[in-house]
Image 1 (cartoon, rainbow, N blue to C red):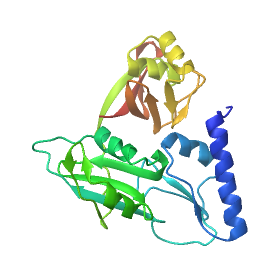
Image 2: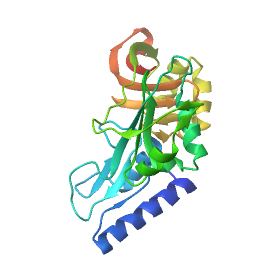
Image 3: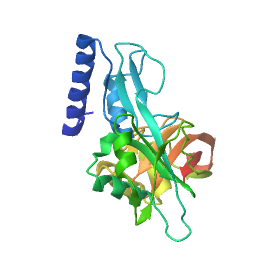
Image 4: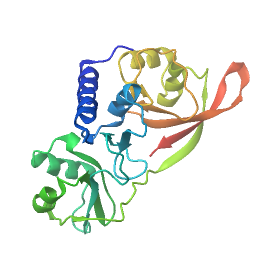
Length: 246
């Protein structure tokens, strides 16, 4: 697969960090990468004792790449900030938090996962950025907030549901057709149009097979995990167990 300009730039940036880490004998860090960027990075810089992917807690979606010249334990300069909120009179959404961060002119790669619970907002950030945010991120959607370091490092919980779908095969065009409720020819066009990702990599060919536990993202339709084929049905079709994020 040919890398895009963005992928090529990311690979060059990470190569530079790795080389400098080795030359200077120090640990160097990338910004927080989204899942697609991580998938690209891991092809060239697989996780090892000296290449660490970390987002501050197990299962984090956004993670930094750490090139370790000096092997260390711990969470590598990432902390969690939490703020208690009262949403009885004003609701706070993920979009509101992102807007407040953008208003402070903070680049998206400068912070990791964040989410809103009923009575808290949690945000993962680098240690060096934490004082700035605690001082300046004091209002979100006209609601006053006060962030503090949370040493408990909460974990984001995603809601999912399992379902069974019938598809012509385990080819991606067949699976996308079933998940998106479109014809197989439409599914092929969606894939060729860059609307489908498998394991966070945009597909460019509809004949790719999906392996067990593969993550399928369809723009406008959601995210799914292919758990495996349950059985064959009439007409050589297959029943597939799917886990959908809700």
